[in-house]
Image 1: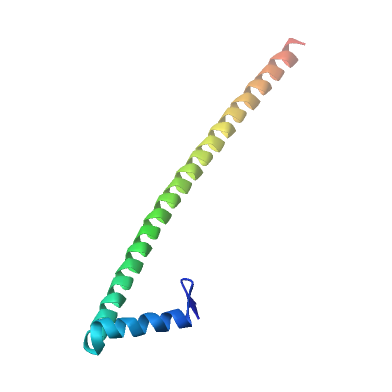
Image 2: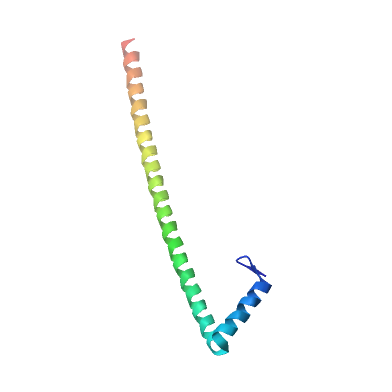
Length: 96
């Protein structure tokens, strides 16, 4: 068992010291409070991660839309060029 780089002997020493300092009556209350604190920290961490994911997803969507718009613009420009080339070819053929 290795929690945050603290092995079983270290955890045992910490628990014995906590029992001696706070006493058997206060120790369960401290454990309960520690659990609530860890739960709230985990919840805050998850919310923060979700916000970061949302921002990243919004950026990806914006980039995708820009890419689609750019592709559409390129297609329209290519169609114009093709049309101009056909018109030029038709004019050359009619002049010959």
